[in-house]
Amino acid sequence: MTAFVRVSGLPNSNFLVGYPGISATLPRIEGKVEIRPAEGISAPVSISLITIALIRRETIHPFADSMTKRHLAAPRKDISDIVGKEMLLFRCTPGKEYENVFSMDLPFVIFIPFGRGGEEVGRRIPPASIQLPFRTAETFYELVVTVQQSHQEQRKYSKPIPISRYDTLSTFGMYNRPESKECVSDHLVTLGISLPRWSYGPLDPVSVYIKISPNPDYLSKAKRVSIQKITICIEEEITYNHEGDEPSKKVNRLAKQTQAIGVKVPEAGYFTNLGLVFPAKDRRNSDGVIPRGKQAFPMFPVSGFTSRGTLYRIDFFLTVKAHLTSAKDITLRQPIIVCPLDHAGCKEEMSAIEQAAKDAAHVNQENPMLPAPAIIRERDPDALHVLGLTMVGGQRKPLIE
Image (cartoon, rainbow, N blue to C red; front, side, top):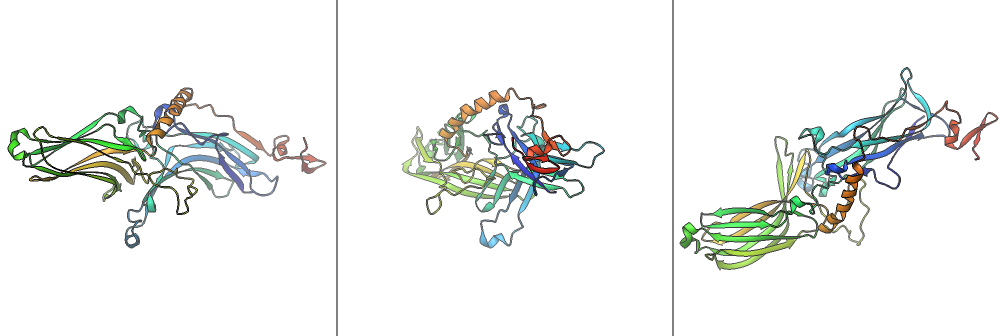
């Protein structure tokens, strides 16, 4: 008899408890595996072994967005590995090949690594679920239940689990410290920029303070330099196979703002403040309807965000370019963090994160105190009651309570 397998979360709750990327919340997957007969009404199921594991799958195809290169390039590359540890849910008693059961409810909890063990692969914080346009790169997670039924082959049942990362929220203090950078052109002028904060989400305002100052040691030559215009843009840089032998990069320009200046560099320097709005992706289709999202990927109003997997990494840069005459143009690239939530959404999450950290303080990772498994074996008294049946005169009849 083939088993019917279902993975369900906690009542009125999600599989994912806590916030991945924030160690104080002890991020974990909680739920239970339900085993029932797949066919018939009351035929028992023979079970030898049941395990569950959280599997991360990554794939890349850098040329999937090009119709001509797609078929000529190397095939799609993919990897999969176990996040955390595989959990043994059931094993029949020694000396028996299998147990005949009518139903099984097996609680489980899988703790997601939160990075306290250094850079070992098994301790790294797993990247967030993401799927770039044309599936050039993607990461998704599955709960995989392995069931061994007596002498039959092992069967695997998967359930997609979307996972987000919350360590890039723009409301964290480490992203609200000003970041500065300088660059010199021909020893004559210096371009300096300052970012008041460096984590942004969709439709968040991005402002940058810009200063172009002359070199006091070459002041007479520096005064001849004219500032034609200043351009700022946000770039998305995707590096495929960044840990391999042949990494490849693609740079996408997401937004651009240009300000015409047309003045010579003053002795005291030229100061300005430029800004733009971080672009958001419209999730509506041509009919104006938001389509149902894929179960394995959360729906965010951005096409990509800062992330790093084994096969790819996604970085964002704010590029400032000063177009000059009588001197070389100066270009500065400042790394920034892109979060899938806007600043208002990040603020809303902070109170929930604080509450999750308080709840996690009562959880023992070594002994999480799971509910006892509920297993109804064929030989148990009144075992048929769980199926809504009972024995009357040697025949199985519906149970009337």
